[in-house]
Length: 64
Image (cartoon, rainbow, N blue to C red):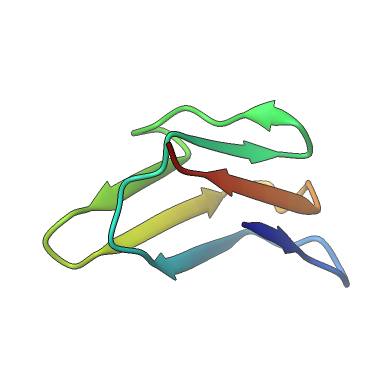
């Protein structure tokens, strides 16, 4: 899955509903660290991705 943002860079949180935990989450080709930049809540089926700086434009989420 690819999510591309546009507009003024601002800190944000993305919440994606998914049944399975992702294998990888990247931002502009850089792998994000689980527990630091993203986390998966298996009870709620929710992936949360945090960007503190607001920089970066393109997220890619992949599952195995």
